[in-house]
Length: 175
Image (tube, rainbow, N blue to C red; front, side, top):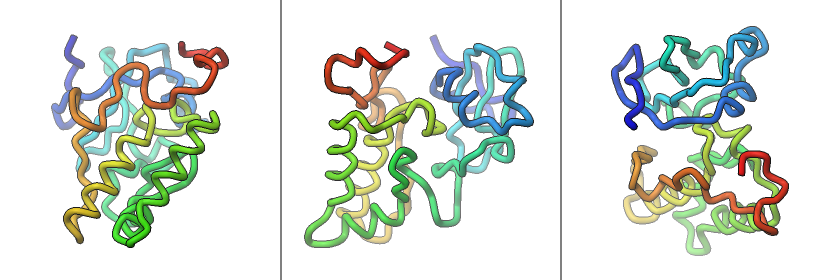
């Protein structure tokens, strides 16, 4: 089922859990967050971060974190769990030893330390976007972070995401 278009820019977006929206909404607007469904608007120039079919929307100024893929100026967060920026990932990927940051993120995910559903505004694991930023940086120096996270792209991990915790995700409430 296609998502309803963003009421400002008209783009369709990826569904995000209400838990993500509630976790990242500023306290002044958190009481307005319902069970959704909510959709993430990825259009960089659009102020809307989340919208839902009933017309409720939250804009960048109502979100507790900078939304990296909507930012034009550094720092642009990519990995919200561990604080890695696009600039750091790009610099790391350009080194001979790179991408060490990606390996670090992967190790922490394997250790069950990620919390993407409550820290990443997109409501999915950040690893796909981080890998894409590194790949773009290592193959085309100077390229800016524009990542295709549409369904079917490399950055799309589907409902399960890539934050697969050991022991079958038994401790995760969303599974």
